[in-house]
Length: 430
Picture 1 (cartoon, rainbow, N blue to C red):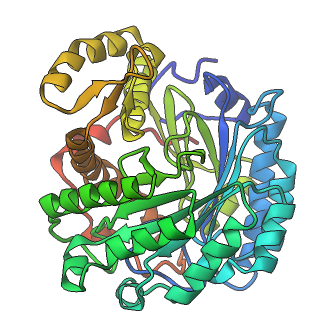
Picture 2: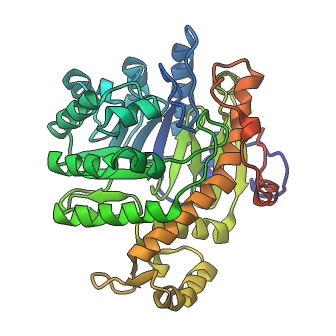
């Protein structure tokens, strides 16, 4: 049966989902548990109930085995593994059986809370096969960390980065850029960035603080031009240390590979709050932890939303994330109409100073500094108009099951007109 044969509610099994994959896929595991809630973070997370983590990881392993049984990763295994959250390192012993069960051909990456970045814990992650870690530094200023209500101080963040660099092939360090707060506190962002360059981090990710309406931080006005100025200064600082700007928000040591969770070309998400992109289809798992567990225990895939993008939409999705990495190459896109549209638009992008031909790769174009700024603004628009209302809708599952996600107030989210249009083709699999 063709899973795209008719609109509405459709049954998706592991076998039919495997048939949606248009090529090799990576694996994403979501761990939704935190010991303490950071009020700026919009991701699916809860403070766990007694006994809930054990039941959750049992369900996560069952979901993974269901996909493995259907042959989703293919003979070569998953192209990569990324473990995010929540706090993925909160229950390492419960995570271990799932990681050991997944055949992975390439990079194995995990997010690390600085207080968990001890030599012993990092050694355990390395022994489990992880080759890359992302340390949630956010800042080396205790004032900024207090503003963000992070569960660690600057000393712990610095120690975690140093310990990770001694153990892993690829170490990313995350910084949060809150332009208004940064200007009011003597410009700590650029000093934080310089310290990470001096430490020798392989990559630094400088994410702007996204103020989702449903988080305790709530919505706020963004100083767009000031953010552009700070990122331009960051780029110049990176050059003085020999680093390269490899994407809109990341700076890399020239000899290091890139680390990313969002530009993996195809990925299968597992766990409560995970999403999947299989080439022509975008799927979202249940966010409610108990709802997720119940679906798996009943023998169903824990899918809550399904959007069939088709060849045209899938190629457009590819082009969007290709641009995030600072590159555009029409020949690599899978749809003829999208390839033709991009080729037709490239002269206009060049004339507008947004892209320039890549001298190292004939047929490719690189984003200019102005292009990076434009993408920065576009990504924020997509986040607030599409991602925020979707996640708010999914987070309401916690309230329905009496979960411990009281930090989220879905009713306060932005719901712009575009969401009313885009959400119509979203199906609810059964």
